[in-house]
Image (cartoon, rainbow, N blue to C red; front, side, top):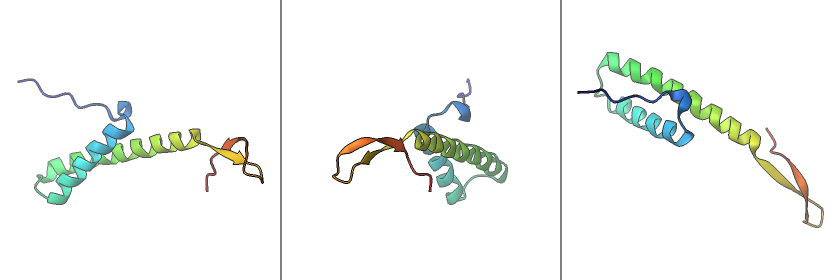
Length: 83
């Protein structure tokens, strides 16, 4: 029987990475995973967490907010504040 191909973390979308990360967290929280497998899936979880964080940062950098005049009329756009 052929093994299922595990997708490379670097190629995953945010949604897919987050969904897999949630599955890993659930498995680890249940505590029914052997130690060696726990370590392996924990390491994958760390990679997934970094991928999600990088994709969120990238999206945040692309978001712009609309600047309004004192009268409340749109006058342009500017980058989202990073605070």
